[in-house]
Amino acid sequence: MGLIMFPLIEFKRYASPEYLGIHPLSLEIGYWSGTAWLFYFMTTFYFVFIEPHLKIFEHKYMQHMMYILLLLTCAFSAKLFVDYFNFYIPKTYIQKYPELFTHSKLVLYTIILITVATITAVRSQFIVRICFGSIIFFAILIVWGLFILFKQHTLTQYYLTILTGLHGYIEHINLFITPMNSYHGFYMYWWFSWSLIIGKFVAQYVPQGTTPIKLCLWMLIIPIIPLTIWYALLYLFFTSSYRMTTYFSIAMLMSSILFLMNSLTSIFQTSAFMLSHSSKKLNMNQALCISYFATLIFFIGYAGLSHPNEAMIEIDYVGSFAIFLLYYIAYVMMKRRHIFLPFIQNKNA
View 1 (cartoon, rainbow, N blue to C red):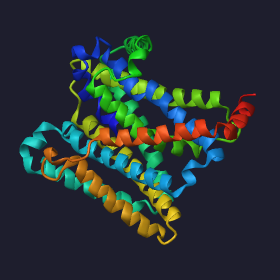
View 2 (cartoon, one colour; view 1 turned 135 degrees about the horizontal axis):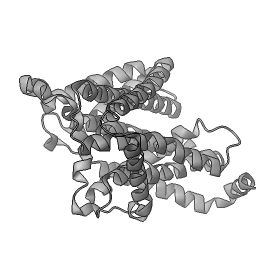
View 3 (cartoon, one colour; view 1 turned 90 degrees about the vertical axis):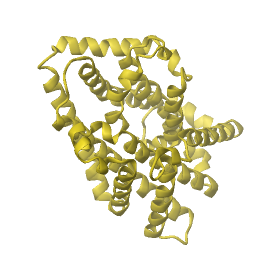
């Protein structure tokens, strides 16, 4: 969801001196693509090649902590949807019906989305369909955007914009490893909160026999190409005199809703399975119900009910919790490295 809604709002922010003169497109690529996915590769590597031997996440206490991390991260995605929703609604609608776009109403709309996601999470076929639907809709959005863009810009201009963004990212790649300012720090905490979740999710779909090098290349290339194409498109929209049409703006919002629903339904199903598996007394529906109410509590803790100032949870806390889990995993790996190192060496041989 964030990859659709964030860039057009963030490009203006990146003109600030605190971003060290780095090209705005390079910053967007760095925050969403290269460095982030390199980090996700590390957690995926763990779940594919090391976890089967250490079995850390087969312990109940780790399953419960992973369960809490899943729901906290899921609830934060819903909170961001509230923050950015109004930017993509035409201002004439907001001026005409201001009572429909207050903070409390946006919270209500998001709670409805969370409820629908919970109901549909029991149907695996629906999750697959919404996953493919969100990807296809995003692809259509890119093609539509390029069609609009090429009315004002040439293919050469677009290609040079992509090269400029990638060159700026590679040139300053060292600056993305540690926070360059508080907003970059926010992104890094967000990366950490997603890291174990994405690693565990992607690991389920890695074919047997995949080498670490192949896994690394696939996890870097597959996300970077479509995201760079999309960000370059939005950056040219931002820098040109083009005013985004109402239809395209609403299409971006709809695409964001699909991605959010995809994220919510997948996490609800995964979290409910984890809870029912770790607690033999709960069936899938009971576990799903607990996940639903816990997510609502976390979501309201992030967003507040009537005003953002009522928020009590920050992504910093969740990211710190994820960092604690990562340190614990690193500690166990060092302590029990004799168990998995022979298998890793055989993989690379």
